[in-house]
Amino acid sequence: MRYQMNKLFFLIPVFFYIADVSAELKYHTVEGFGELPLNVVTNGNTTKPAIMFVHGMGQASQAFRLQFDSDLSENFYLVAFDLRGHGLSGKPWQPDLLVPSKVWAEDISGVMKTLGLIKPIIVGWSYGGYVVLDYVRHNGIKNLSGINFVGSLGGLVPRRPFPKTEAVTSMLENSMRSRSKDLFENILSSQITAKSFYTSTMSITDKDAQIAMGLMLPSYVRRSMSGRKLDNTDLAKELQLPVLFTRGSADMMMRANDTKIALSIIAGAEHSFYPDTGHLPFFQRPERYNQELRSFAINTHGSGQ
Image (cartoon, rainbow, N blue to C red; front, side):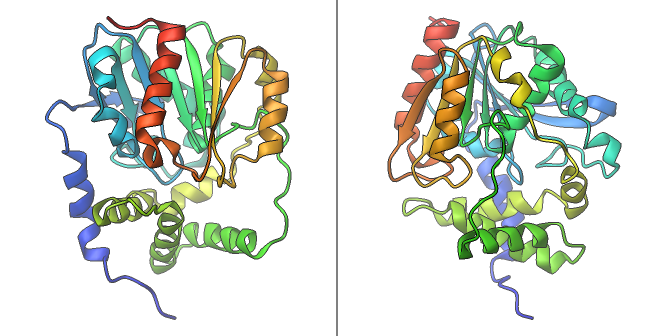
C-alpha cells in the first residue's frame, strides 16, 4: 500500500507558524469538563461585545484566522478555542469524556465564564454547530445574543441518508480511515479531507495546515466521538433568538432542502447563500463573510463603538 506522505515532515512546524500570524493574538488555557485543558485564542478589546467561534471536526481555532486578522477585532472581542481532542487542547480517550452532550456544553460554559463573556454571538461551523446546540441543550439561550450556523444545521432537522454516489462512498471510506488504528491510514485520511477544502486561492502553507489540524485529532478520539447522538430536532423551536445560516452552494454537509426545513421551523431565522463556495465560506469569501458577521452582530449585539 502506498501513502502520500511527501509533506508530512513539514506539517507541524507550518501549523505553529500559522498560529503566530498576529502579534495581537492572546492565548489562554481554560479548564473544561473533567479538568481538561482547553486552548483558547482571543483578539480585541475585552470590553467590546464578544463573538465566539466553534470549529468543526478535525480542525482547530486557527481555522478562523481570517476573522481574527481582520478589522472585526476593532469592534468585537473575538474568542475561539480548540475543541476537546482537537488542536492544542487535551485529548481524552474515555467515551464518558467525549460522548455525553453535557461534556461539550460545559467546555463552552468554561470558556465563557473564565473569560467573562456576556451574551456573546456564537458561530458554529460544521461539527461546531452540534457543539453549540450541546450548550443550548443544557444552558438554554439566555446567555447568548445570537447564533450563526456555518456549513451546519446542527441536527436541527432529521438526518437523511446521502445518495449512494461515488463521491459519498469515497467520503464514508475516508471517514473509516480517520478512525483506523493504523497511523498511515490516519495520515492518508487527513490528506484527502484537506484536499476537499482546497481552493484556488489557498496558499501551500494553508493547505499543509489543513492536513496538520486533521492529524491533531487522534483516531481514538474520533472513535469515541462516533458514538455521539447528534439529533437536535427537539431544540429547533427553542431557538428564540437571532439565527443566521451561512451556506456555500457546493457544501455537501448543508443541503438546500434541509436548510429550507430549518428556516421554516425557526422563527425569524435568516439565510445567507454563497455561490461557487464550499464548506468554508469564512475562508473562501472572507471579506463578504466578515461583513455579514459584523452586520449580524451589530443588529443583535450592538456595534461595539
